[in-house]
Length: 341
Ligand code: P6P
Image (cartoon, rainbow, N blue to C red):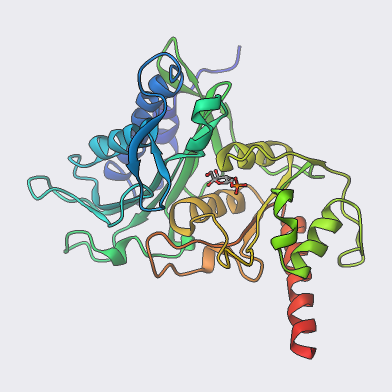
């Protein structure tokens, strides 16, 4: 029987030298919030928490009760601990200030409390995504500048996948590590140490029903992924299967574990795509690079995009480096053709 290592033990043993206490405890707080959210997502059909909360979030999306619940859990776990200077949530229009009565800390937390929530009622896996930055000015209480940072400046990122089991996967810049919740113990136990994106990739994930909305370059890229059309950089695509769950964290996790690429390209009606930069694409880009992969908006690394608005969106290609760089090659070729037209 391999050693039983709890996430608390692992965090303690692997905390970066610069971050003792505050940073380490912040990761504990997130793990605890995940356990609490798990309690309700695993019983969504049983307690009166299913279905719509009646509200509409900043994205103009109907809020499911679990969205609202998860957002509240993370806020309550983190607002009073003195570890954060500010928070930003997918469910909140503005930044979330630390209440005046509580000491402020040195970190900023950005999060999507429950991504893929439209899948809740049909029992499809959903997820929480988070990223942690250092505050820009430790003397001031949190400001927008503390969260509008490029993902390359993250000090930690991770997600929780509420699926056939509940897993917490995170990185503090020292590799990507996965922990599976043992509901009996109430502990996240180390189950996947130092995850690396495998080669060759097995899957590609894209909502093919949008094909007609994409630019010619994206259409040619997806044709290439499917083994049709012209070769990319003179290399045929590896033979892959299509898998698209419609829940970003679930699609991302499968591709992280088996190799693959997730694509949510720009469309004529969504020139910036659908995926949010700050608390979805950014943290996942940090993780995939830590696991040996790459994430791009089709032209540049997601890690280098400096956010200008809390809820801004970005086109996203994320997974094995070779597959994502091929997307950039097709889009470069498209730009050259347009410039010559
Ligand atoms: P579509 C869920 O709403 C989400 O933001 C991601 O979790 C998911 O990958 C994507 O939207 C699915 O979007 O347009 O394919 O239904």
